[in-house]
Image (cartoon, rainbow, N blue to C red):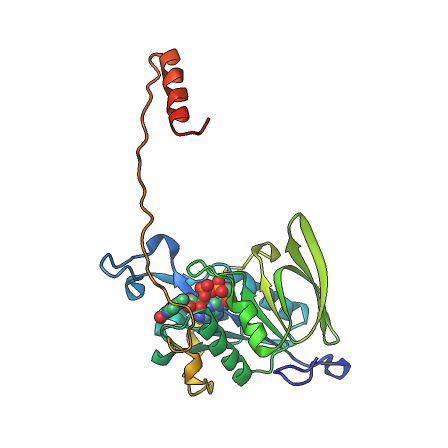
Length: 281
Ligand SMILES: Cc1cc2nc3c(=O)[nH]c(=O)nc-3n(C[C@H](O)[C@H](O)[C@H](O)COP(=O)(O)OP(=O)(O)OC[C@H]3O[C@@H](n4cnc5c(N)ncnc54)[C@H](O)[C@@H]3O)c2cc1C
């Protein structure tokens, strides 16, 4: 297959450095989300942020693959987000990734999943070629699970979703297990490819002290829309076909009735009546 990356690795490439990329997003630490009561928008700058927990599995798998290849691989982390998202890139470096880039530009603000995927695909074109790209299954804030498959589509490479195990890799191909209802299926794909991994795939490591020091010392270049040669009509609000019409808290109403147990028979009668009134029984 010849896609956006040029010819795939073939037998002549065996033994050369494999180039891996991992997509990570910074998300609000879930229990600390703050919403502006007036506008209903997320107060991102006031929130504690973390690397998307499900992206840790993608990072871990890339690092494990590098170890499996006896270090014959380079791992590049790519994130798109505000300046503070550099921390998510550094977290991935502290776990064993080699380098990282943050895609950050005011012109990218307001990007929906399609515009985000377009910007990431442009960054990948610019920083690649890569043999394998890892993404998480979904994020804990947007939760669409669309970005990984959309990036692969824009790059015109195969996407393997719900990946729970890498069985084999080499000779320009990869064999993986995909988690499906009631079991798993084994799928083979040519490289380059994009994998969206599920959390059953591994147990992410904690960063070591030396990893943390390396991350602190590694410079993370910030790429702008110009650096990735983005078409401005395809990024930000302009490039986003989706619109958030309204954000609201679900109304929790408690119109229940407490039925006391001092008169068990009466309580049962009242309970049955209560359920009948609501058409439950
Ligand atoms: C109209 C509209 C406007 C929006 N405006 C903004 C805005 O101004 N600011 C803002 O922060 N969000 C904005 N969003 C949300 C933004 O589109 C999503 O955060 C983004 O597209 C990722 O979608 P998701 O969280 O569902 O990721 P998913 O598709 O669930 O993520 C799957 C995987 O893709 C990768 N991935 C996803 N996002 C990124 C990323 N940014 N960088 C690297 N890898 C990634 C990760 O590996 C992740 O595990 C907007 C959304 C809409 C619809």
